[in-house]
Length: 279
Image (spheres, helix red, strand yellow):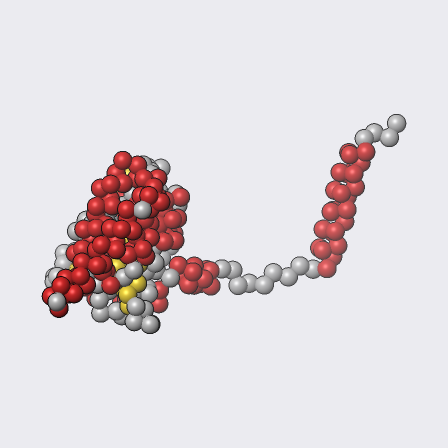
């Protein structure tokens, strides 16, 4: 009897997921996003859920909602491909909650779809390579050969068809500081930061590059918004605080009076035009 109960417990999460996915309203949402590829994507959700015991502790309906975000962006959720993930996290109440996250390959894929990028790349700079940053132009130049297999930093590079180029480089220490400040998952022993630091670091530089200098298509804006590992609002606030003009501009009273007089003249002219000629 105990064996039967154990089997029921193991089967139950998968069955609940399949039941939720069989609902016509759910299937319609995936069809709207993926058309004829909806069936294959739904099958990949079942495979993902069945292969992850932590994800099985999450509400199947919440898992489906997070997977739908990937479907909307037309990105596969297969872990091996590295485009997008649905990652389970334990909240403050001890509940397992699924979260949609993009991999750095997902950001590159969305950017390349625009057809406006000539080159787009991200990589690791190992110890021994010299890094020169030109403060004036923002150009970053790497010279020399690595002397070890330990990363000292990470870069992302883009070149548009119109000739615009930009490189972003962050040291490993800068990546860690950024993750501590903005990533909701940093510090979690089961997070990708703990299991695959290099990939998360590459994602950080490519995300920063595209969000600051890339072409912000509707897909890219959606991706930046739904990627729940990054605290986007705090990052934007910090960007404004760091770069916004802090100088107070004083306007003399006589300048204000001149502006008021100009405004009155304009309004009077508009009124005369509406009334028409007075003869």
